[in-house]
Amino acid sequence: MDAMDWARILTGYLVVLNLVSFAIMAADKGKAKRGTWRVPERILLGLAAVGGSPGVWLGMYVFRHKTRKRKFSLGVPVLLCLQVSVLVFLSKYL
Image (cartoon, rainbow, N blue to C red; front, side):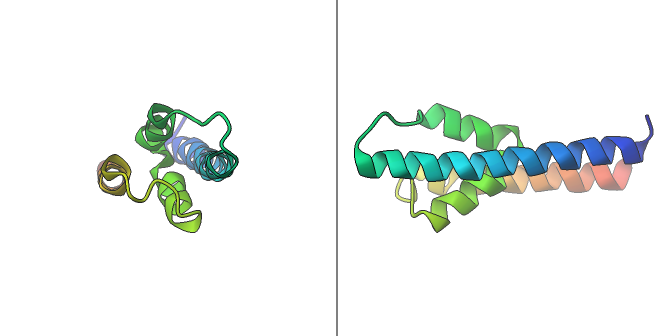
């Protein structure tokens, strides 16, 4: 496989992961309103850590969910910055 194939695979992975992350944030906000079983925070942060930080971050502000929790309001943007830095590095040097 060449670099373009890897770029397409990575792009597909990130698109799907971020759509799923955004949807899970929406579902968790709905569950919070209804008082039912919730998605554990470690799952939400885990999704952000493996590349879903844009979806989680967007979900936080679209649904006004987890914005008061420091580990989300600070942690998710930090993860996003790190992930963007890695992508910039990889695109420049690979």
